[in-house]
Length: 91
Length: 417
Image 1 (tube, rainbow over the protein chains, first blue to last red):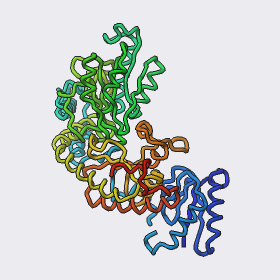
Image 2 (tube, chains in turn blue, brown):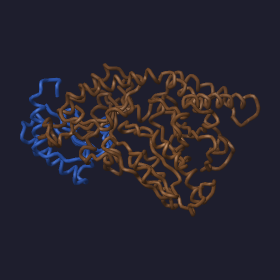
Image 3 (cartoon, rainbow over the protein chains, first blue to last red):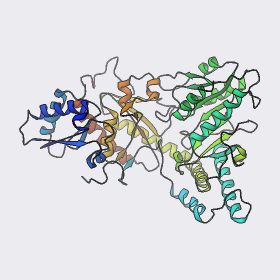
Image 4 (cartoon, chains in turn yellow, blue):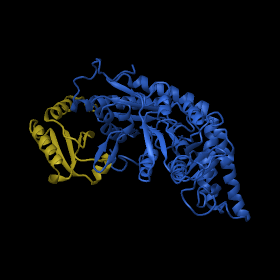
């Protein structure tokens, strides 16, 4: 199971909205039980834990992969595939 | 994973951000403590408890002076390295604009200062402020290592040049400036020379009996002393105007009751730094070499800064195609504290002005991370850090444009190999 956390300002910020669209589109290419998407506010407890300083911030399996930037769908797909192929504990 | 210690308050971290600040050394804290509630007198008071505090100041001043090989009378205490810099710059340039202090003769109230493009904001923002009052500033370029050229300093001198201000060592990349040559030049032209020594003090030898600068700014918290204390060396015979008015503390140059505990701590920190300097330098040099060797295994890594004329504790590396802020935050999650030179401002990041001045493009500047070593670091720490960096770089490059990673061509940035 891959857990993707998106920290942003919901639907109000264009960049966060676009990244959420990308994340949803890429996640849809995997079986539903393999990818879970969580949306977070930029100032919630999780955001403080990860040290979110800019939005959108994207976290994949507890690794921050993007801060204040968009990610092309192809690159996110490559990352998620690598996560699924990684042996347990190495992601 | 605990939700309580994610990004800041874990105490078992590997701290590699000693150029930002250092912990107060136990011996320093021990020396400070009596001055909070036992020897709490005002050093200006003439009664017994005031004299106790004054004695603490006297000893601290002697210890700071000893580290620099100058006389105690040439040291004044301030509230920060930044304040020392402000005092040196404003205290020299305001009188020059007014034609006072004997420095305005022939200048018609004009004041020009020579500095570099890689100074700390304590210098550059102060000069920005002074420009509104008519101070003219020449910002000298630096080479690819962040080093200024003394020849450029000579060429920049004008009839109304009233000050040269150049840092001893750079906080981001560690490059040590040719301050001895510039000091000789400044003396030749009779121009006061201020050195921002905040990063150099306690990391490399600083002997101001041989280095003929006029002013030297320092900060306690960079050398295992407390925050909120700085000092300024003012060479005997040189005049400076106060920038705040009030009492006559610190030879009338820094009004306000002295921060006695902090100053005593600064003195102790200087004493320790002097005793440990040779050992610390050797140790940092070995650790630095170890870290560079470990991270050399990562493809397309570039060393920012001079490979030899550098602070022994500072390593600044660009990891091509990796966003350094993202890498730094991930390392923080793993209990490893490093820093980027990027400044977070109004919801966006600005690349380091130092790295841009060295000729790096914005992408490389954004991919640069600073590791600054300290007394607590061990080779084992660095092995762990290198393992985490390698793992994260590999992962983060999956989401970046990484086609050129590992391909050494004319544009390959990994020139330190």
